[in-house]
Length: 410
Image (cartoon, rainbow, N blue to C red; front, side, top):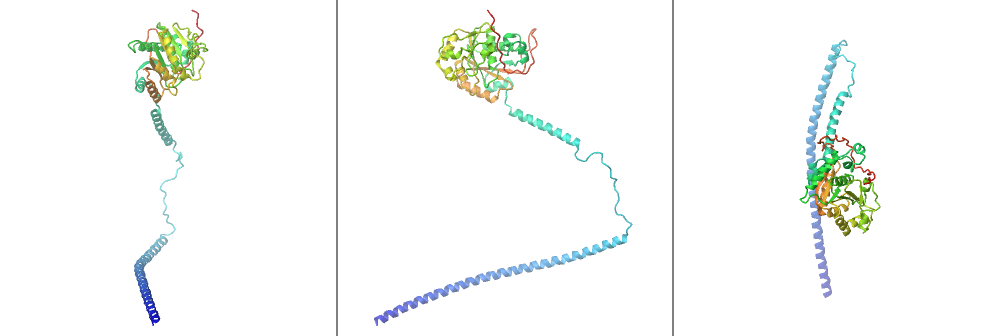
């Protein structure tokens, strides 16, 4: 009986599970059928909406079809009337009338030569003016003393006229020696003006040790140093011109001297005579000597200061001709050793940015930047005089070096 009760309970439990499963399946099927019914209802609504749209479009199409038929009938009627009128007019009537007789043209219609030339001339002038303005705005080369003073912050001590090759050849000298060969020339007068400006530049008179520098090569720095030394020697001063450019020396070529012994030997402690006499009374030259391997280290050493001090006791003025400032440290060392530094600027060649940077580098080296020399192409900067010959008008002045003839005895 217990076994039968247990079996009966198991059967009742299974019966309840089956009933529950059957009820769940029935509910799921009912839900699926309800969802399907809703989707069918939605599709039915969409189809009915499309049907209504098609009915509206069909009505519009029928209206357009009737309008097309009406226009076609009107077109056929007008065409028939045109044909009837053409048949009634007959073949003798010509509807074409000559308005103007055709003439052979005397000139081609295109191209219009006069118009094209006028347009090309106008465009060429405008383009040339625009190009000139662009080049002028991009050209930063200095040309006036005001521009030089504005970029350096120091005054222009003298305007030096450029000397043409023809005048230098007639004087049998280069620009560096023209002040000695031709004392009445505008160039000699300009350097005498510079000498006077240097005398009144400081309360103690002209600086004893003067350093000539430039921003870039080939700006007339060496020629200016030589002419200044000649101007001071002509005034009765004992002057020593030192070629401190140990990389590219040139003063021995200008004066026709030997460069076997010079400044480089003095920096190494050589006791042999270093200076050499020239044909200019009161002027001696210390050439650069054999080129050293480390020129900056030689110039920055203590021996250079001692040598300048020793030579300063023997001469009234020492003039140092150094290398360009941009890209080299030699000029900064020389500027620090000198009492005053003079910048040589060539009009139409020196760049404003390079000059401003040169002045800044010299000031950073604690140099006494006294002023500038402006080499100008205007040969008429010093035309005033009594009985002086008219200055040369040559414009092809380029820093030119010519050897001085052998020194005359006595």
